[in-house]
Image (cartoon, rainbow, N blue to C red; front, side, top):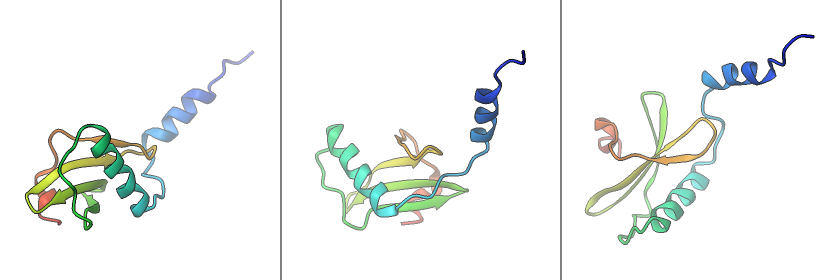
Length: 93
């Protein structure tokens, strides 16, 4: 009997997978929710949104004071808050 390699094949397929199709408005809404859920007190600007940089997708929340938070859209569609973001991300706003 052959070993079950289905999980290995799926892991290999996911490793090189691109970000699945996502709705920028939905990602922005989810980033807003994450911002306030983690204790953010400043109100993000309504023009905050999705940015692509070096083949990776991000949601940038900002207001008149500057960038509040940057979330990377992972391949599985989840958001991950970044402590440090790419240097060019503020130029793309």
